[in-house]
Length: 213
Image: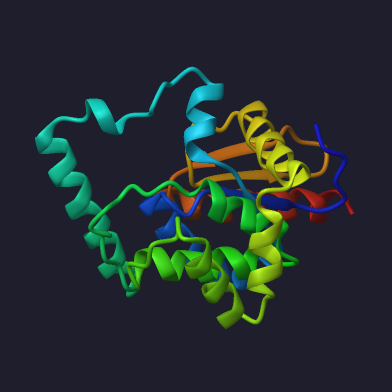
C-alpha cells in the first residue's frame, strides 16, 4: 500500500477509450471540488487486456444491440457533460505510438488532453506520427522531439511497465481511478460514471484525517 500523507488519485487512461475520454473532461471539476491533484497515468488498453488474460477485450464479442446502446450511451453522457463527442470513422485506431508520446512528453496531462481532443473531437488519425507531432506542437509541447522518442527502448519499456502497474493495481479497463488515502487500502473505481464515488472517497478520507488531527 502506498505511504501517502494525504489522499491521492491516479487516473489510468488510454486515449482510444471513449469512456476514458468522457471521464477526462470531468477531472478539472473533481480537482476543484476536492483540492486533490490527479496523476495522469498513460497505459495501453490492449496491452492491459492481454496482461489480465482478457484477449482483445469485450468489443469483439459484443452483441449488435449492446454495441448500438453503448454508442447511444456515450452520446448521452457527452450531452450530460456538455462536451463534444464524435465517434471516429475508423475507431478503434492503434494508440501505441500516441501513448508512448504521452509518456515521452514533459506533461502527461497536457499531452493526454490534446490527443483526446484530436481523436474524439476532431477525428484525427493519431496513428500518424506527423499528426501527433502537430497536435502536441499546438499544445505547446515539442511534438517532433517527443514523437522521435516513441521508438526508443526506454519509452517502449515505460509504457509496458505502466500497463503492468495498472494491472497490479487491479485495473481491468479504463478509465480507472485509484484513490490512495493515509492508513487505508487503495480504492479502485472504474468508469466515467463512478467519478461521484471517487469524490466521496476523497471526502471520506479527508474527514478521517480531520477526526484524527
